Length: 148
Image 1 (cartoon, helix red, strand yellow):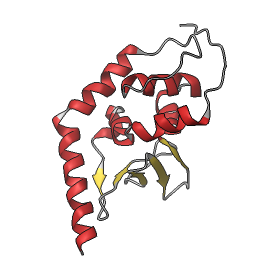
Image 2 (cartoon, one colour):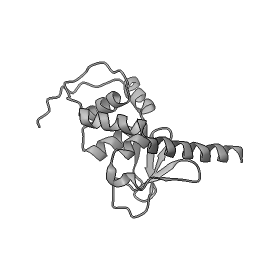
Image 3 (cartoon, one colour):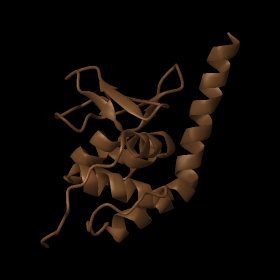
Image 4 (tube, rainbow, N blue to C red):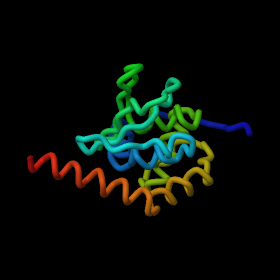
């Protein structure tokens, strides 16, 4: 499928809003191959097998600020760069797909056709019991660590 796109930049405020209001855990869960291997760390963050190299044990840490860091290959980034890597998308398409999935209003800047199937998948994950249980367990560990 050929995509037509006018490359106009969004300002930093719009990009920051997408990063802040998206959820990196939902994005990580959108890849069914890696979804089974999400673990909760002692600090209440999540670890997962890295998307940038073959990984036998979870080495990529997902932070609540929608950032990630791989302890093995040292790759780091935010929810948008992870989404781009996972779904082989360009920046603009990733930004607009995440905005649609997380109900973030952006000014119309391009003619990128968002992947509605992927948007629906992300929304389903946000509403899933599995996601909410993972989030609850992570919050409990985070709370327990802040008390100690």
